[in-house]
Length: 638
Image (cartoon, rainbow, N blue to C red; front, side):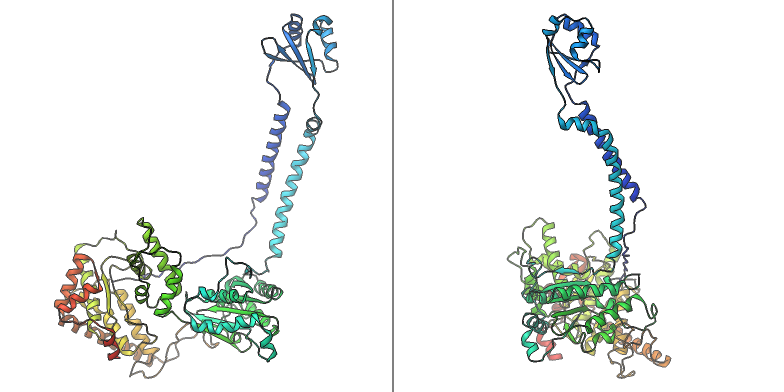
């Protein structure tokens, strides 16, 4: 029982604009520096021992009375040290010496000679600093403001000049930390064999050129998301020991016309200077879509960028030793000019990994993770059909996170099993509590899916049933094939539709009502039935016709079109889809009615324990006369 919710995220990539507060910030910084300089100057000016200030006449009187031991002269300041170790400060006349000052006040020479007089002149640096600081501080402040303003203007100008430069990320051959080789890529054996020729050419181009062979200039990596296209491109560069320039197709496109083409020219120029090198353009369909669709006019920025890519690839010479690699999961929308001989004429398809490949990928991702003794990666590989390399990486990471969350130092098999379900369906929502009635409906709904899947001969066997909420699903039934398959038959599709309708049928029979729970099941089964009719030619009434494309609408340069069939064909399609759904419903209804005792047993056990694993589930259905599927049974039926 699940509902789907499609969330579309959008992110705007905005360039930096000069802030209107830049000048204010510069002035504020200058004022702060001026304040610090002034404070430093004040500290230097006021530095010296602290003393009480007294009048000059009082100091003369104290000298006459013999209370003063010594007098230190610092400019016009007189610092007197008394017999009780107290310092007092007085100021003499600026145009007379100490002796003249005391004599003018009537102090006899005998009394003056009894006092030790020290004259301290300022050091050269301190003197000149004190004299020049009032003049230099304003000049320094003005120079600082001018420097800030010119620096800001220079930065803005440099950004304008660098706007058309390439934003490629460069991995140099001697960068050991980021180097990737074929040993780091599990599976994709055929793809690695194809790319081995590229590695050989980059290492030893002479033997190819001497025999008159020309290595393809462009290699297009095609495959589903997460299958390792970027990783393979990096591995080619790592094996060959050449520079690797990586950039995304979207980084070429800007709102200003000509910027994308300028970045393409700059990228190819850098690659030629660093040759031998590899240029890798990820998601090339961002700029390489079919031209002439009427979107954005005939001279929009994307098309200009694509034209420049085509020109640069045509401009290559055989001995330049620069190879362009690109990746996409939408090869059907690419412009034919990109795919013609001489450009991306070698296409490498990277499929989803099979069971053995998944096990090898799991071993690579588990190299740095401590495992418990019960971990069996083979079992994990068997339970993850359809997982890409990125999914398997996420699985291993989630397993480690689950173990760390529970304060364990090793990853157990149970962690990896839970991680599979988390990657497929989302995290558990234990706080999402169901009422007693909802829990019963959910249990019978999932039991209906499982029961129909166990009885129908071409449905996948059940591995687990749960009524614990995950993601948007209130419960789920996990049924996986016994072995990987690349093709599906019509009989398998029909059984899958009946399995999807099993929950809907059970709700209607057991509760004489239908909830919103089966909404996603109806969407999936209806879409599958429509694909059978319009894409796979599995309808006897429609015949061997493919009425809808298997990708975007922009195919073969035709652009966006409506369906290319009549209203009568459209009505026939709707009729066939309804027929397939009705037959699937009746098939599921017959199974639920016939095996109602098994249905009750599965549902009641689910209500008690909330989760049933494969072994316990098979014991329940065997007790009610239903034999679980084995591998030999599936092969015999097919």
